[in-house]
Length: 583
Ligand SMILES: *[C@@H]1O[C@H](CO)[C@@H](O)[C@H](O)[C@H]1NC(C)=O
Ligand SMILES: *[C@@H]1O[C@H](CO)[C@@H](O)[C@H](O)[C@H]1NC(C)=O
Ligand SMILES: *[C@@H]1O[C@H](CO)[C@@H](O)[C@H](O)[C@H]1NC(C)=O
Image 1 (cartoon, rainbow, N blue to C red):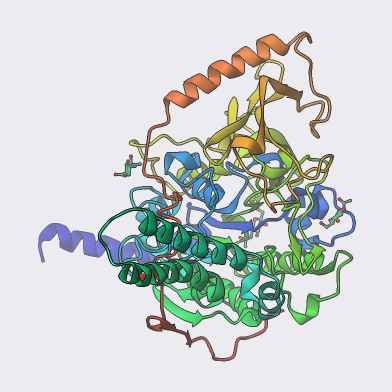
Image 2: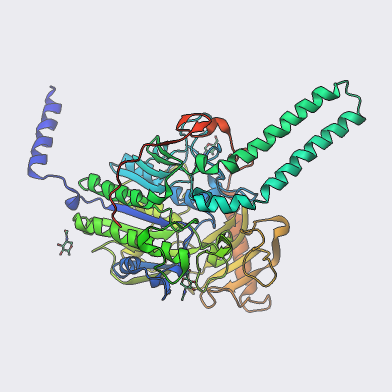
């Protein structure tokens, strides 16, 4: 042994004997980042709901800060989560799209969070953190071959993953599948497409002289139509086998998932992660499957709330939050763990489940999931508890973004922000430590897919928050707030109304965006020209990158289909031991 390494050995040994490095005296905090799926800001007690019981989330807010103007970068899962993980507007990573597929539509699509993006997990991992994600991913899986896992959480800085690489949706539940496929209209349109293709080909052959034998061509045509049909039908018909799967790290453990067990399993995994990592700094991303449809709750919560299966599921999620917080506190990690709670975007107004309205509630805010400009789609609950650092029972009304978690976590974890990328989030540390009264965000851009729908201006001198809408979705039926004919409002074309001059609201005085300012009002001109200028500056910073959710990247590719077994015979259950019920 060389002298220097000998010396290092001695000092390290001595140090570890005299000062055992345990988490409680470690200067780096742990992070537990909790994100609900589709939860509305009006669904929890501390944000004004007096009929849903969320005592654990309310307690978290009581012991920490409540961010009342906490804004998602997109009004729908995949792009909002991409922005959260990268601290960047989703169009910077190509993770948004204005067309039909605004989120990843199936697990075998080739799109996903590009490998050259740097998540906060990657930075913390490089700084000695144990990083885990338990729950939903929905950021893609494979690029070119089944199992390359280029978009997998473990390729993006997480050491541990347990949960759904895709997202929960209604077809994951047996009862729902039965009712849904009984009256699915989409098959009809597929049949007509196939017929149309066949007809066009036959007519072409009849009236042109291509020298091809009609019979041969007809066989080709029928085969092609059949393939085309299958490429759509198979993902629909077998969707639960192929999308509703559970993985542990790189291994598929349930295909299809056993949805009745999932809540128990996730809770058990959360406890085990905390227990395994209690002596080292860790970051745990709790990415709940709650409260997305199909809203499967455990026995203890079924029929308990005053708001049907949705309320039951919210109350169950609240219980899980309490269970995680208790695990942190009972392990002696309370003083050294920053706990964050949020939702990926607003509640889904138009969603129904077996013909009943089951979406979340966005309180006084207009609109919901899918709508980028209206506040209800993007203003979500934000809570941070960091004992002994943030003063309990504090309210921060300043505009903050889900993208702010990125620089906050990186700063506190001792990492450096990437210097080759634009980071749109701003550290929350000055606000949390009461060293600043204003957030650093002057403008926040509210995108729907790739279309800029609205801009928020935080006027520093007066403190006023303005919002200008350049486009708004056209609601159906008329007079309703929402797009009840299509389940989700669309971002562009005939589905939106363009506004020139933009619609302007003073959010500070009119948070529900009901009193539109008039072009002749005192501030109108000045505010709009300030915002227009900011848009022009902002647009200069956007470069063209590969579109991860384009039609070709966001459709079923059999060769990328994760499969437990031999494709196409994909099923297994490796998680069939008893799960300890913590509920
Ligand atoms: C509480 O949440 C439920 C379910 O989303 C909703 O129906 C109800 O209107 C909310 N109540 C209040 C006071 O916001
Ligand atoms: C946490 O901090 C409080 C106040 O400083 C202290 O009384 C308590 O003992 C600490 N708890 C742990 C587990 O270190
Ligand atoms: C990632 O790679 C794509 C494609 O090569 C490129 O367009 C993009 O700018 C890269 N992004 C970053 C953040 O380096």
